[in-house]
Image (tube, rainbow, N blue to C red):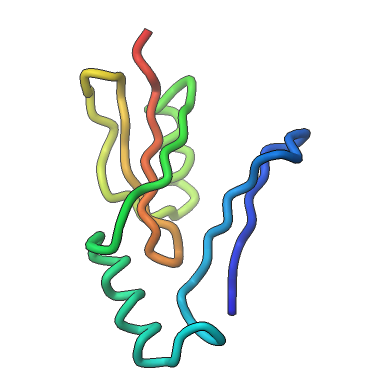
Length: 98
C-alpha cells in the first residue's frame, strides 16, 4: 500500500491522507478498476484548498510538472483551477473572492 500524508506545519490537529488504491485492501484487478474510475473523475469528490493568488499558484505547480485539469477560471466565489495528484485524486485550489 502507498500513501502520502500532508499536514500544515505547526498544525497537529489536521492532516490529509492521499492513498493509491491497492493491496492489501484490494486485489490487483479491483484496484486497477478503482484507479481507473478515480482518474476519470467518476468516483467521488474533490479536495479543495485556498490560496491568496490562484494564478501564481497555478504557474508554480504547472512549472513543477503537476497534471493540471483546468486553468484558473473566474467563478462566483472567486478564481479556481483543478489538478490531479499522482494517484488520480481530483484537487481544486481557489482564491476566494473578497
